[in-house]
Image 1 (cartoon, rainbow, N blue to C red):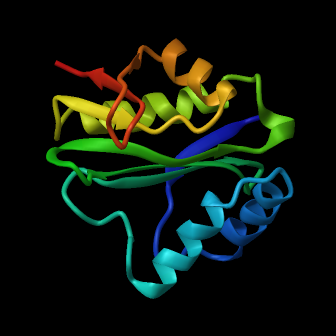
Image 2: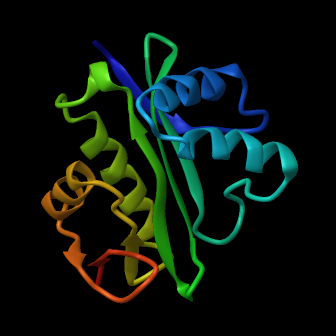
Length: 145
């Protein structure tokens, strides 16, 4: 397995739709929102500090993760739309994807937030160094400076 992590660009292509269907079968609808919001021009990960990355195995999109401006703090960024195909989990791909995004974020923000929506996500983000924070629209923060 030779996984390549690279920016996803315009157009997104059919890979994101296939990955969204895989995610939907697991009960996750947030990947389909990437394609829908991109097509509608709502979110193309183009603002300062934003990025959308994909992980590919032999040309097939197997994971995705994005970084957008944090809605409640314009000087912070938020990790979002993060998903790794089930059969590729536990191989460090999610960690590599997150590390790429965090390295990118260091040039733009002192803090990255995330909304961890499941117990698995909470464990993942805390293992990445994110600290829990209650009472906000996000569940965890990571100070980069």
